[in-house]
Length: 152
Image (cartoon, rainbow, N blue to C red):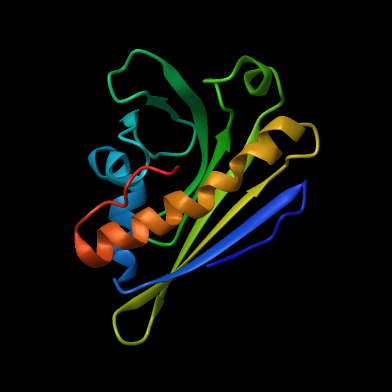
């Protein structure tokens, strides 16, 4: 996995032994997202203009309320991002997350995640290094069926 640590744009890329359709299912199916994203509960559908809300596993706290900007299954999903679980990050302007999935020969895929529009969101930019763990967990779930242990 590679990552760029620029403040205004962060890019992560991972290669996964799974076809693009399975990778898409993991990122676009609410029940699957919880398997790699801390048990998050998603509410909403990935249609342009829709809101997708992300809740804590017990639904006690709203973690995110984001708008779908682009959706082209199984290739691309783009949505806004605001971390609502932290008051300082919640006060920052929305940023944007783009997921791009490419089929590769041999049953592999390349998943590229770009988190950008971070110029006015320095606390969010500093905190999103967690994408490395979540993408590694997504890869592990798809390849082994098991989740990684929680990050330290």
